[in-house]
Structures are given as C-alpha cells and as structure tokens.
Image (spheres, rainbow, N blue to C red):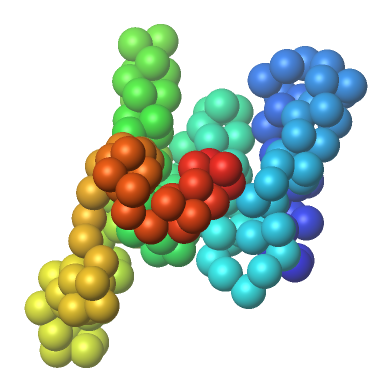
Length: 175
C-alpha cells in the first residue's frame, strides 16, 4: 500500500512536469487511481514497486538526473522481468540529451541494464542455477512467453470455436 501511494505521488510529479498544469496532473492521477486494475497498486504484488520505479526513472530522466534515472530503471528491472525494457526509453532520452551536448546521459541506460543483469547473475552465482531457470519454472506450470495482446487473439479464436466461452468473455470484458 505504501508503494502504491508513493506511486500516485510520483505520477503526480511526472504529470505536472510534463503537462505544466496542476489540474491536469491531478486528473491524470485520478485516472490512474480509478483504472479498473488499480487495486493491484495496494495488493501484495510487485506491480506498485515496478510502476513506482518506472515513473521515478522517467521523472529523473526528464529532469536530466541521469544517475537516479538509471538506478530507478534498475530497480524496475529487478522488480519485474519486463522492467529490463526501461533501458529503451532511457536510451532514447540519453540519445536526445547527447545530441544537445550532455555526455553524462548514457549512465542511465547502462545502470538500468546493470539492474536487469543482476537478478540472472544472482540466480547463476548465488543459487547455482542457470539464469534461464525462471523460464523453465514458468513453462513447467503450463505458462509460456507470448507477444503482448496475443492472449486476446487466442481468446477470440476460442470464442468463435465455442470453447470455454464464459472464461474468454470475462477476459475480454476485463481487458
């Protein structure tokens, strides 16, 4: 719950920085807080920590504070596997800053990438397991990696074939 509240505060700061208007920033926070899946921000999951770290990373990058941007990007990468993708917007921001003469900007995507590398390194060295063990564990439970949104395509196909219609309609409704 604490990370969820901090997430809303950080999102307000980022929105105010981007919009320059306090009312629009408050409206953006209201939209985030009232989004149907916002209850995950107060649940005992790592979504609030991930979103907090991602927001703080972007906020620091927009203010040209490259070391905190990279550190928060690294925390996002440690919180969730998809957090490793924080290196992409940080690299873009660093490239823009580099074109304007700021040569320190490349520390941010490098630090975020380091954060993304720490967990597999810990699994490999600290736990004496191959870094791909998380993928093996996921597939052992019947899971697999897919492109974002592909589950909606699969659900539509199952609905059209008349398979598990209620479950797939619920998935479509919530999405």
